[in-house]
Structure formats: structure tokens, C-alpha cells
Image 1 (tube, helix red, strand yellow):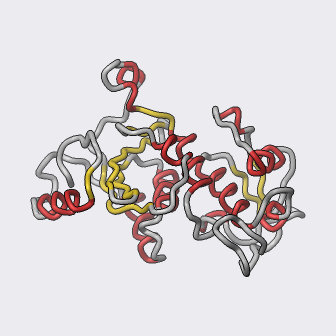
Image 2 (cartoon, rainbow, N blue to C red):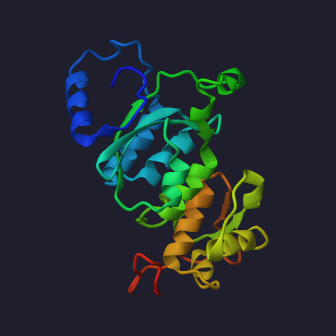
Length: 248
């Protein structure tokens, strides 16, 4: 584990050198926490499926395990240290992920996941003027990441034959969905639909529908029903699907 609380970004080469050096030290030498078996099992499953570097998949694993963790995220040639606290609904970072994700991301991956030895923030810690600005709401960042980052498809937990419905309006989580995806999110709050149907709504596509459903799941705002009359199998082909969400 990299010792200390990282306060800035690292170059990839610097991070790799630090990681090689400190990985050779005895486990627990710094009094760090041990990763829970629940989260470890989730991460092992991702590795077996060859998606262990996918940021959306790893954050979904932290969400399911409700386990805080320190993530090292490579964005272009920099490593971003981020600590997520799913139970509290916040993350700690010196840098605003929401603003970065909203500008669009393409070259993004997880390079390491470690147990966090930081104390889960209480109200007092969040109100301290010297650190309060670095504890940020988690849901808007997760939403923006899932909407803007490259997608491999639906997350495994929500894939397959299903109908979907949003549990809350985006505004209830302090988020505003714009364009076709925002309209689709509002429509899903009033009616259930399959992935195939969402992809056919005005302004939508298969890729945009996948991003939307993954984003709703990450923000704990998705109901998945396997036996609903509108449940349909997941589309098996993406012929012609481009990065801009073209026809399928």
C-alpha cells in the first residue's frame, strides 16, 4: 500500500516506482486496514472476467460491497488517488472528478485498488474548513462517469432479460440530465422498459441506453425486473454501433 494520504496527482512512472518500492514492505507495516472478503471477492470476479481495470465495474463492486476503498485511476498520463465511501455517499479527492468527467473521458482505467485506512467521514470532518472541500458527493460523479466514459456493455448485475425503471427523479439526487438521456431518465421514472425499447426512444441509441442504465444502477436508482411484461432479452448484436451511439 502506498503510505500516507495522497494529496496530488502522480505521473504514471512515479506511481509505478512508488508502488514497486512499497509493495515489497511487510503487509500491515503501516497499520492499514485489510480489504474485506466481500470486496476482495468482487474484485477477483472482475479480474476473472478481464474487466478489473474498468472504472465503472470497479466502482459498481465497491457499491455492492458498500466498502470504502482507495482507487488509483489513470486518466491519460496521470494517476488520480481517490477514496470512495459508498455507505456515506461521498468520495475524497483533491481534484473534482465531476468536472473532469463532464468534459468527457476516453483513456481511463483502474491501476490499483487498496483498502482505505482513512476514517469514514462524519459530519464534523466534512464541516472542517481545511478538508471539507475535498469530500464531495459520490452520486453525481458516478452518474457523470457512467454517462461519459467508454462502455463495454451493461454491467453484469443488470444484464440479460429484464425491464428497467428509475426509482427516483434525477433532481432528487441533485442531478440534472440533459438532452435525450435526461428525457429518457425522466421517462423511465414513469414507465418500465427494456434496453431494446429505451434504445429506440427519441434521440437514444443502444450505447446511450447502456450508459443510462449503468448510470442509474451506479447511483442506486434502478429497479430491475426479470418477469415484467415488458422485459426483453438484451440485444445480441451491435452492428454499426459507433462511439457516438450510432444505429444498431
